[in-house]
Structures are given as structure tokens and as C-alpha cells.
Length: 412
Image (cartoon, rainbow, N blue to C red; front, side, top):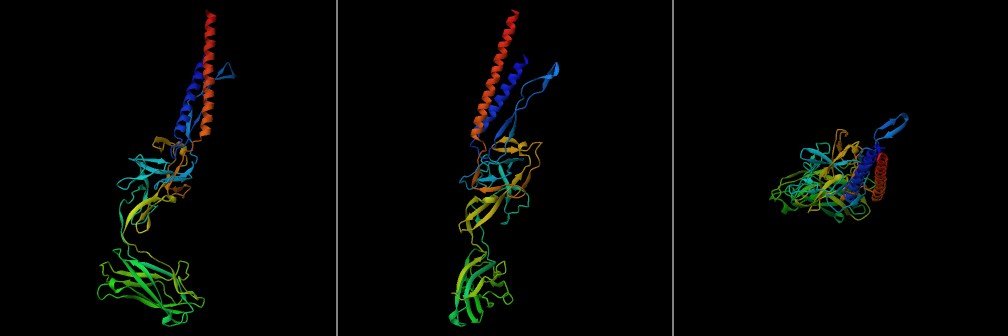
């Protein structure tokens, strides 16, 4: 009978701990990326009384706690650099020399451009080098451009999509012109004029020129000339049209470097011609060039797949960084260290880092946050059950106490 005191007291202690666990879950109901902690009870060793058929337990041990890494709801947050993981994995952080992991993707940038958590840990991934993000390279602190200028890039390649009127007469009445704007090494724009004239059946003469005002004295305004020959179906004949057409733009008046070997690509990547000759008005449908003028950074945003995109005042965008995601086979072995972060323990499988969406890792949703996975109804139910258990074991204590007093009274 007297063992019942310690048995019931162990239950009171265990239930108190479980209530603490539930209370902590409810306290973090609105914590982004928080994962529910569950309490698991287990009994203490039993002892036999006289025969093996009579066994008495010693109560219940302190409950074990296990994190439940189920998916939380992914909600749009409006934060430009917020990110949520849809699926398995963790964001990687550096806190001093320690590596930490989190599901909370509320990020911000400091004055030096470092991507940080609200509590100052450095977010890990890959930063673009010379405009290229190498996800096969070493993972490190993500550093974003802050107030920087995008340097100009000289045009190296141009394309023109359009149609030349097959019904045109092979004389000056068929003349048609269009323009393409290119950039030099200083970011100065130059307008190239492309003139076309039909010279025979399925044959057009082209000339590419630049204004004389863009050149130093004595510079050549005519950059390229040649013929476009079409097949009977109105498409460019690949056997008679060399591509790309190359030309130079030199002796620029602004002092920019000579633009050598500008490529005019006549064909798409699938081999189809960009210019057609059908019985329709001569017209341009599209053009492109790979140069750019100097521009100021206007902002950075988190995109889906964990790419961080920089926007510039000339309307261009560039990928400047990529988040890394760590896959951990047994995440329940991680230990919480506060600030929504976790660290590995001796029982944790080695984390495997990589780009989102690869190797079983979840995808990243940009400008969104993962909500806590705490279920309010479930936690309230747990509270009711734990309260009932506590009251029942408290009743055991008072009952044993009454029985003890009754036994004492027998002596007196």
C-alpha cells in the first residue's frame, strides 16, 4: 500500500511535465516553422509479489518528448525575402562556428548585404560569382548586393524575328527597314538600322548600318551586307544562309571598346528560321540583344525554388543567390536551441545539403512562411485528458493517506 504514494506521485510529476509540453505548444501556436512537441509516457519496472502472477509497477517515468515534423500550412507573408519549405528539409544557418537548422524562413539583410535570420544567424547557400550561381560549389554565407550598380555589358548577340512580304516586287518598292538597339562597354545605346530589299525570287538583300554620329571621324557606318535566300515554302534555306552573320562596331565616339564579332543569329535553337517570306506585310514581330546599360539596384526578392532575384531600374533582373536546403533522415533526433533553430545530436544522421527540389528535398515557396503545425483542438483535448489523469492520481494520494491514518488508528 505504501508504494502507492510513490506510484501516484510519479504520475502527478509526469502529468505536470506533459502539461508543460502542451503549454509550450500552445504558446508557439503563431511561431513560424514551429514543430509540435509530443509527450510519450512509459511505465517503470514492475516487481513480483510472491508469485510471478502478481506484479506491482513502480509508476510512470518522466515522459519522453519527440518533435513532430509534419508539414505546416504555407501562407503568403508579403515579406520580400521570406521563404517556406514545402516538403522535407531545413534551411541552413551559421551561428558563429556552429551549424544550425530551421524551418522558419523569415530573413532580412543587414547593412553589409548579409542574409540573416531575425536573431542574427547567417543564412547559408550560394552567392553568384561573376553573375553565375554554382550550386555544385561550397556552401557559405549568402551576401546580397546592397545599393550596388549593375555594370554595363556590351552586346555580343542579336536576333530579329519577322516577315518579308513575298508579294513584293523585286525593286526599290520592296524596301523595308527596322531597328535594333545595342549597348557598348560603357552602357551607351546605339541604334542599328537593318534595311531589306527584294532583289529576285525568294532573295532579299540586307544592310546593317549605324548612325555616323555614333562614330569617330572616319568610322564605317555600314556594318554588314549580304543576302537572305528563302525556300519555296517561305522559310530560310539553311543550305544557302550562313548563320550567324557576324560584324564589328568600331571607332565609337564615346570611347567605348570596339565591339568585335557581334552575332546576328538567323535561326532558333530548333533550327527554324527567325525570318520568313510569306504573302503578308513586311513587319518585325520581335527582337533581342544580350547587352545592357548600367543600372541601379532597386530591390531583392525571394523567388520560388529558393532563388534570390535582384531587380534593377532598367527593368532587368538577375539571380544573385540560391538558398541551400539540408535533408536529415531522422529529424526527430535534432535538439531545439531556441530562436526556432535546431542542432544535430550524436544520434542525428549526417545532413545532406543541396538545392531545393533535389535529392528528396522539399521545394521553396518565395515570399511565404510555414505556419506552426500545432493543432489547437488536439492540444485542448490533451489538456483535458492530462487534467483528468492528474485528478485521478491526486485522488489515489488522498485515498492512500486515509487508509494510512485508518491503519494508525488500529494501533491506538
